[in-house]
Image (cartoon, rainbow, N blue to C red; front, side, top):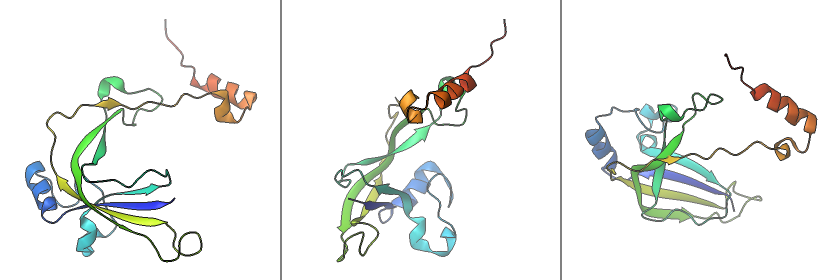
Length: 160
């Protein structure tokens, strides 16, 4: 089941967010091209395309935010986020719509879900470290030569 999930700030929550975080329009969350020209797009916090088959988010669900912890940066991924945590945005109501003609014959998605969120900041939300998937021979579809080449490229020279 393919879902398009839109997370939006509920009425008055965007102003509360800006007031509490002292951010200006366009700072610190999802940006849409030409958002200044279409007021409703400014309220979009995030979009998710979901084919997992899991249920849609329900009230109480929190969006997560990525964080970089300097001491945990991997040399292979120096600009990648290292941790994540629950954000201050919590789903308070959900509207889900299904098209009359389901995918793939009509609509692109089986359902479109609009999650309205309230800004409820969490004091000292615990950080959770991202788990990096290990690279194995299966990552190269069993191609031992390509895998060995990749392993060789990952070796770092050490000065003694």
